Image (cartoon, rainbow, N blue to C red; front, side, top):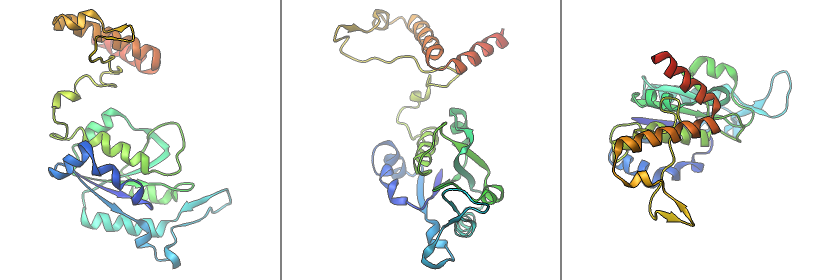
Amino acid sequence: MRFSIVTLFPHLIESYFSDSILHRAIEQGLIGVDFVNPRDFSPHRFAKTDDYQVGGGAGLVLEPLALSNALDFVKKKNPKTHIIFLTPCAKLFSQNDAKCLSKKSHITLVCGRYEGFDERLIELYADEVFSIGDFILTGGEIAALCLCDSISRQVEGVLGNSDSLQGESYEEFLLESPNFTKPHNFKNLLIPSEYSKGNHARIHSLKLKASEAKTRFHRLDLYIRYKQRLKDEK
């Protein structure tokens, strides 16, 4: 699995891949990351990459020429790359998307800036368009890191223990149940005693109930989908 991140500011995010799990995955050859700066492909004077909006409006927009040249460069090197534009005007990225995308051999993540992209770029190049939430960022770099991290951990071998992928939040429309470690008594708050008795069936049942309660409290929308799935399975 290899990622190409198309961004005007690669230095903002390069360091994220220099430590921890993703760094080890790169060293082991499980994933790879490279950065493509549209400024290097701008035909304009002073490597210009933005322009005023046609029809008026506040803020500048990423103009088509530099970015299209950059994407053509990536596609020439990686003809089968899967191109994703990151923008708040899109469907929300999900755990299921991370699983599906982890099967790709090459993904190109295109980071927006200013007031976003010339829409024709999305029409011409995008295989998918994702948002990471109902809020606005100053650029798509953080969103690109979110997708890289989430997708990479689904790639076989990236996590030292594949069991870590089991029972995570959003599986089966549930949030993950609360987790605990030692000490058993922390500031007069105790770990549920059943967790220490070794009855794995009982522990599983308690964790499921806690997961249901947590989902119902924090994400009622997911809880409704979870209940509907149980109803459909009957």
